[in-house]
Length: 538
Ligand code: VG1
Ligand code: CO
Image (cartoon, rainbow, N blue to C red; front, side, top):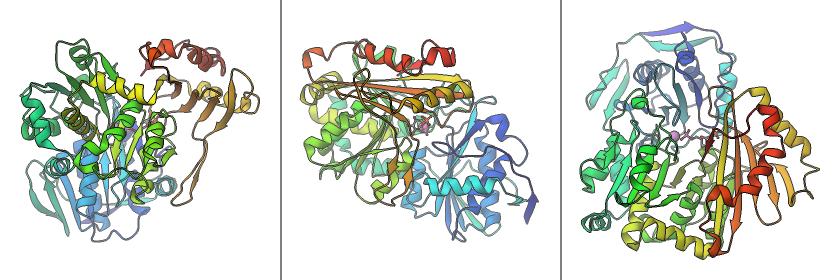
């Protein structure tokens, strides 16, 4: 039986960089999730009888909202839903399922790297038929609908059993519960040479993969320990838990400390990797070597032809604007274009669909390719393994050789988290007010507020971050986070190019010290925010 339930709009249901993210208690308000889900459906056309993919990262409240999405999909006229067993799907696996089964789209329940649990974060995101996050045109339409919604449709059917694989019905709609890993694992075996990696393991090579109590546990167990044959225990924190076991599932040097302490000092595994809450980010480390995500993108692009999936070469590389220009140097050498897009994976979709770019990356631990339309944590890990298996050098040797060939882009991101919103806005305003006067000072040659003209659909996206560009190629970039749920987070990205190999071993913060000081003084961050130092440095 289908019910039409009267409702009234909630304020602030505006999708950010990657879907709607709020604290769990906000989502638990009566009608809150339903309003947003109905607003998604009301922004789409032509899905009657079609397939919707549903899954999430298993965080607190995932189980309840999966059932709500199923009931609302049935009431709104979808013909079939494909749901990961127990309501679980990593973000890249959801993207792949949508594409492989020609679904109309998908709903991914995740707040990614944000903490989970009853007081943690929750999120809902819509992905379109290409498997990618809805473009701004759709997210703008969803937001508009949330402001005028008056009712939503839902069935009064009982919860669907999601524990076992199989097919059932909710009203006229088919519910197919699928294994979250198998299709994805098959795709990885097409892209990478698993036999080469097995030979590497046989030679004694060892790794640790930290799933951080989140979604990649089952994927890591099945692919790394199962199919590839790494010893049991290779995957750490491999059981997805509603509160991630208390972890902050953000794969950086701060939150993946357990892994870093095992691998970095040496004497332990040769290679370390971690992924985030929903499985789309990756951290790559070797003995004594942390690979910045910007360098990882450049190195994977430079070595792509060593792997079967990319043996034919790349059509182009794309990176988000704040990501370092290391990839640009690789693209130049390969004679292929390098695109610079706003932050957020949704901006890569058109370039990938049009075949203009093959590999994409963001400084925020995101790397991926045209195999899906999301960034993909395990994909990056497997690509690194394939490259390591072919080159038979350490991570550190590969990185240093890359710097010698291309020069090094020293890079760091300074986050000032949970700053008062007014204070963060005043920093951005202070910068905007100085855009015309900064060139000519401190070696700055240009300053602007980044705007992106999409070369495929010709849409224009403005106000994507303040860029200060220096005469030696250095950059400082400022933007406000679009994924946080408390106050505002000011992100400051600092980059300097160093061609001289004798200066490549300097510690990053030291190498960037002058620019870091300028990054603070130009908008007077201390006075405006009360913060004399960032809360997280990556
Ligand atoms: C952050 C990152 C951005 C990434 C986004 C979603 O956004 O900076 O590069 O695409 O998170 O990643 P923001 O607006 O907070 O800077 V995930 O793994 O949170 O889905
Ligand atoms: Co994520």
